[in-house]
Image 1 (cartoon, helix red, strand yellow):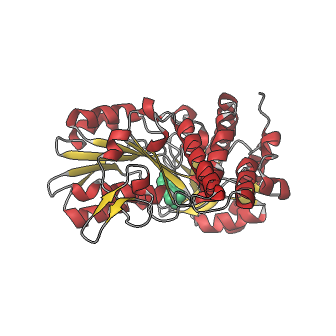
Image 2 (cartoon, helix red, strand yellow):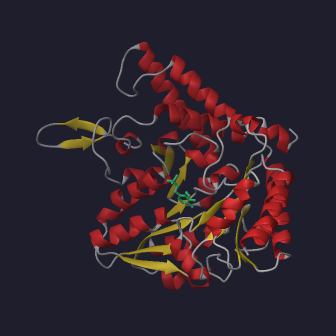
Image 3 (tube, helix red, strand yellow):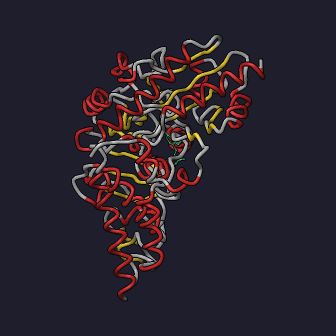
Length: 404
Ligand code: PMP
């Protein structure tokens, strides 16, 4: 299969309907692919019923569609077993699930290691756990360009460490985390590892087995799938060792007034009616993504991001955040124009049809590290083209002229 950005764009109904839109906010949410939209529509029109409850034919068809989605997610992640895939409402819910189910067994004196580059959803749940259980949080330091500084790994991942929770890729700098040394350090002290894959899954299939982590979290909406669904993948043994987080229908073995037993994973962690059509849509999106020519897609988005980084370096008064070498990062480019508020810059860009995000990007500790309040962020997907970079650069020139 040979890749063309224009052809790829054709798989995204919103973009096909918005010819003038330069959508560069893919790190916030990716556009919904036709494969997902078609699967959702077809499911709602032909197989809509609650799952894991009914015995009539329609309900069995809904069950089959839901479990098929689980297998599609497992295939994208190279998971050993589809039952290692827990559907949640998103990355945030997946991380909170681990913070409760795993975290609530921790005791004062235990440690959880994070990095300073985390999104708030992999930061705040651990601070809340610290307040509940008295655990200590340790923070992996950063190198000046925002990459995790793994030189001091042994100092941070101590024998008291029970879990290391780090991002697979930063939503601000795009910096990709080298998980292998982190997994090795965690294994050496018997700690588990959770990777926040919210920014990684949309850039190609993930191999959780090869990564060696215990938990992997991501959201459907960032992977060209629907909102309202996400995944917590957990190694079979790691999931089996956890108690449930939420109680309710579907997650039980047997309920009596005296006591309740739990269903095995993944149902143990899917209390209540799950996001059924959303899971079906996510499965279809990932199935479609899995078949894409990723080497070409990566080369294309890296070329666009590199061109933007190069052009930004030539602008006066511009501060760039993150690694400059595209081999160390994903196509997410954050920067500031001297004296200009990111929101004001975004407003001018909007007049040029350019959709980018400005602000702290739910990563205030990282912003503090860089000594800024916020940044403008352009994030690329394979449907982006040279014209999107041209429009962004023209908009920035305009912002510098009109706002200065
Ligand atoms: N982690 C990272 C790295 C993210 O970029 C995001 C979304 N911006 C999240 C977690 C949270 O994802 P969600 O809001 O879909 O739960």
